[in-house]
Amino acid sequence: MINTLFQSLQRRLVLIFGLALCVPFAFGIWASLDLYEDALRSARETTQGYAMLASNYETNVLWQTHQIGESLINDASILAMAGDSSDGGNPGAADVARCRAVMAQAIAPFPDLGNVTLFGLDGNALCRGFEAPQSRNVRERPWFRAALARTAPSYSGYEISARLNEPILLYLRPVIGADGKALALLALSIRMNWLRSIGQEPGLPPDAEVTLLDRDGAVLVSSSGKDDTGAGQLPDATFIQAIAKGGLRRFEARGTDGVPRIYAVNALAQNSIFVLLGMSRDAVMGPLRLSLMTQLAAISFVSIAGMIAALIAGRILVTRWTDKLTTAAATGRLGAIEIDSELHGAPREIRVLAETLQNMATRIENREADLRRALDRERAVVREIHHRVKNNLQIVTSLLNLYQRQLPNDRPDHGFSELQTRIRALALIHRQLYESENLKEVELASFMERLCRLLQDGSGLPPGSVRVEVEVPPIRMLDDCVIPLALLTTELLMNSLKHIAADGRNGLIRVKLTVSADCGGELVISDDRPFSSDIAAQMPDPGSISGRLIDSFARQIGGALSRIDPPEFGSIIRFSIKKPAPPDGGMADL
Image (cartoon, rainbow, N blue to C red; front, top):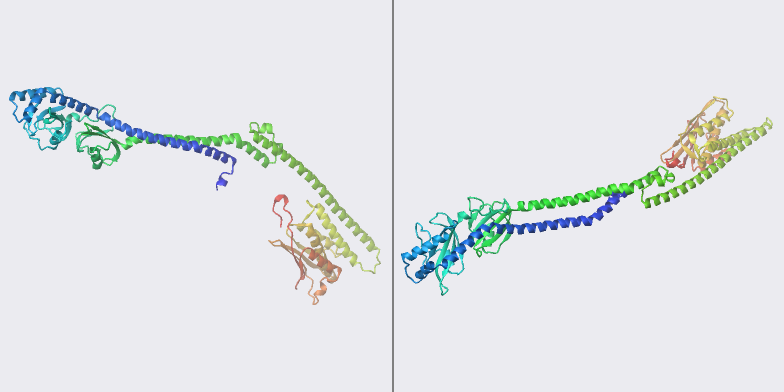
């Protein structure tokens, strides 16, 4: 099938161009995929950058809170309150008032800070910047114990402010004495409402979803609006736990709403707070996929355009010249083609091929002309031979006529008459041959018709006394078969005419030739003579000249002679007919 598909030169040129394009095409595909992977990697890194950008405000708030906390723990009034508490003493009202004034003054310029409290080691509040409706002991709170166990600042989880009645995040800073032991715990309340602007930083994608998580994985604030649970946009709980443990910073997962997202995490305050940014995977990768598809489509388009260009260029530069040569060869004018004009602009190889083919065509034409002239001479010679043989046979017939007239009247002349008839039949055969087109074939139907008329006219019977019906198909037959068949017909027809003449009555003779599909011939010559008990006596004597001639002619055509049983008399000859060569490569008549 492939060989059939690429038989034409034009298609093979396109195939060659296509194979040549395979390497750059494959390289283009590989480069596009590599660029796509790089773009994906860059998009994921960009998502991490967006998470850091989304943390700017929170980072500033935490930094500012830390600065205030560091300033307060170094204040003399607060250190005094912490020292008195750790020594078991009760601070005086004046100390409490000074402490409160310092705290209130420290957080007053910052509305995102709700309150500041100094807790003793027993969990009771020693001093507050702003009084709360009720004072609670926090000794059993997990964040209190955890904060006192370390010297560095830490943060609580999600809390509710009793004073503001709103969610807060506590900045916890132990007050360390000279001996390195904790004297008290300073807690600054960061108002969650001021963190609700998370995810609104300039430069963030509009579809970016940002969530603030505490160290336990609880949602502090979400950019989704009033619902601070972040429902829908958050990944599965296992991912949240991995974030809280501090190991997972960038991953891809489905949100609880089923939307695939790319997540990035930015850890704040020594892994106490986490900013989780999620972006729809389709939003991130959609443009990249579109870009990839565009690149692949461009590569495919360029390849297809190149194939079409190769097809057109192959037609213009190569195959149209070969088509001209093919057309010239098919129309027989290859030798007369004008290379300078008709092949002007053709490739040098095509022009050389055309010159070579033109020289070959010229030599072939010259050779054919020589062969035609030789064949014409041969045909003229053969025709002349047949003509002279026919004339010589007519001369022999004339000589026999002269000799017959000199015979005494009492001597029978049947032998001379039959001999003259045989010679006339031979002359007719040679005449038919030299009148034929190729001198070797005879149109059998007309020839048998003329032969029977010749034998009937030469029988000496009165006109109309014998009727000869000839039924022969219009076929051509070679001379080596026609001659013995004609002479065999002559002998059998002369025998029928002789017996009809002997009976002195009118008669009918039938000559019929049939040809089968396998080129088998059957010649039937019969007459309607009266029934006789001695049938063999009315057939040619095998020992006579006529009988021996019939047997010889039958063997020459490879036939078998048999007798027809009454009520008719006659003979059947079955033989094989040789096919003449088909004229001009066409089908033979047989």
